[in-house]
Length: 110
Image (cartoon, rainbow, N blue to C red; front, top):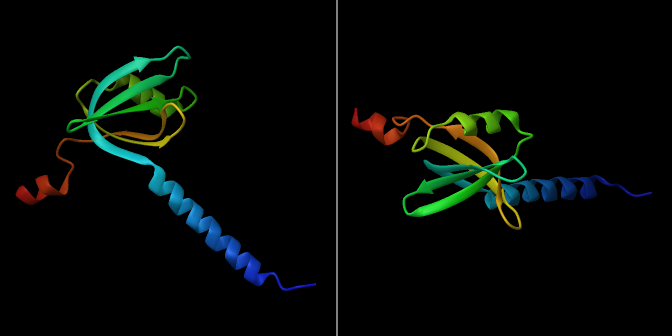
């Protein structure tokens, strides 16, 4: 019938562009853990403060590793959170504890 190589290459480019757009849409925050609340449906609402800004992330119960980390981290500890904004909240996709001296600036000063 017809050669589909052009169509295949355009589909690959569109998929790559869609993935890049999704990555740019994510909210990425490195800051202090301010508040941890348990919601009505037993998910955890994580509040992270970076400077004067406050961000709220929802850690879903089905993600066991993130859920257990959010439960046992003490308040005022340094964390890195990444999430996808939805209609009413930001669903957490990545949540990690960060060491205090884990930045390039601290290493350069030593």
